[in-house]
Length: 277
Ligand SMILES: C[S@@+](CC[C@H](N)C(=O)[O-])C[C@H]1O[C@@H](n2cnc3c(N)ncnc32)[C@H](O)[C@@H]1O
Image (cartoon, rainbow, N blue to C red; front, top):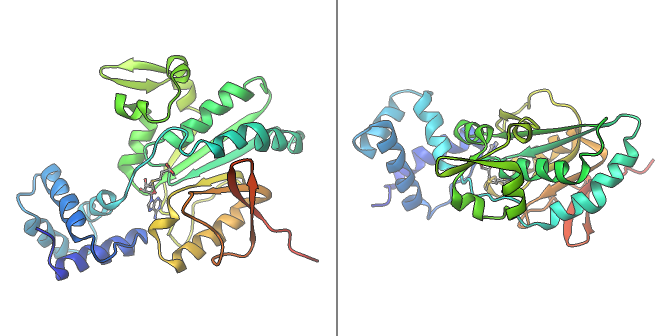
């Protein structure tokens, strides 16, 4: 049974206030099914009881859990493949040349879900750029969901997740079997530093300037004002000659005119516009 409008609004406001995620009308049944999963996990008998507990105070671990369960964590290894292709063939070689006095590259996967995106980048670096031994390749990754961040840190994936996008040679090379699952080698896991960060928070924690930012399939969940605020912060964090990747359904157009949209082979990416004068 879908939630009634009053209960749906309670969840909608709670989720929006804490994560900026917008739950549109029509999502009542989805919200109800996710709440019932959460109630079962938390040992709460009914959704009505769960809602009562939420109403009894304004902040609790249960409020955080509601936000987590409303996030959409769909992801896969080497998702959409083209951004990874151009990273390998054009962008990283170019940045290695440009940064050769610094010998370091900083990459951020923002909204990383269970880690397939940052680990795809880590494996790509290991596969193609490991001979740059005097370089520091640092990958940061974050998600609002503590559960996703914990899963990502563990780097443990089911056969189903492995089958989604991971080339067999990389499975053989970088994973070992753990029960019925597969776990990434520790040296690859150590290439990524995870944090739980709310991208919609007024301030982000201190981070180094980034050469490359992957923020794919995250902005779609926010309203226009939130997208603008996040892109403004991305622009400040990204180096002037850096690269931003968004999801295929996302753009900076009509949101932030300080980015230029450029096509590299089959991938689109966004680069800070050089301001005249
Ligand atoms: C659909 S997944 C995208 C994962 C990966 N970037 C990809 O493209 O495969 C979106 C992720 O954004 C996260 N997310 C949603 N709202 C967020 C927020 N306010 N701050 C940080 N992460 C958020 C969700 O928890 C989810 O894991």
